[in-house]
Image (cartoon, rainbow, N blue to C red; front, side, top):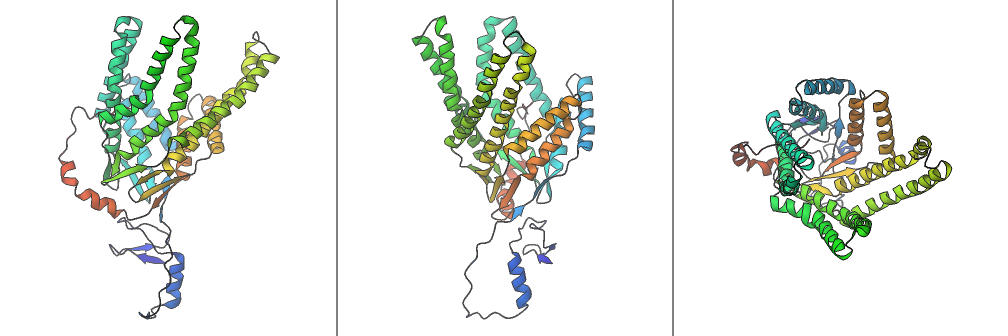
Length: 413
């Protein structure tokens, strides 16, 4: 069976939920059966209409079509040329890698696009490398300059975050329309410091003033770490909210509805997982082996490392689901179904494969991870993709006049 697009008139197979012009198919299977039974029978306009049945939101299929064999060729060439050019080719390597990943990821049958160029990425990496060199020299040879270097880095960090997010959004496209990020420096500063580092620094100062002396350093550090761990989920929530709600596509801004309490629950449970594994394993290792047999102690401590991986998989799955399931972009909403046990199995097998192959199976691990994330993500359309197109048409003139200046750099490594 086929359905006709009401916008362009193109006939599409019944299994396709989206026309090539972006119009979603909103007819249901029951409606097709009813049409087949009634045929062209006239409908009495005076007859009472059936009660409206809520139509399910059409789903845009998200698929990843990359293969480990193809990606291995790109990966090995990137590594070799990066080494031969002393890192200069890394900018071109990033572009080749991202273009492969984007072009092999399809949403509703349409591939994503990466439009980034290597020169801006190279400029950003040169500046980042220069900053790291200054930090290294000041921390090892010119220690009197270290506070000034750290202070300058702290001031520049919000700007780096905003420019990097703007670069990545601007050069990512879908259906020939780019994403946008309009975050400002004051907002980024507020997210990074006012609700993050600054409270921790204040606590450190208060504790140091109250419990001065070397004997109280451990207590001060413990209190500071406790305050940081408690406030970290709310800081993470503000960071995600800032990124999502400052991003837009086709003139439609994102919305984020997750709460700090939901993030706190995830990190608190992961902390309990680490404690539940670390305390009995550490006590058993200390009782059975003792401090002299370090090799056997390490073997008995292996469950602790597995507990860390389990906690990491739990945080990645639950926080990923929380962020995506509470993110809306215009008429598009997301449903993520990551599972902790699946991620744990994926991480462990990937790590074993990489170690056994001396790193040659890294492309295989990357492709497996990408495919799993695509399989567990659903994209629901509650309107028409033409809403994006209509919203973006009024912006084409202004956007096309923009040029990439010297500050259009990518700092992500």
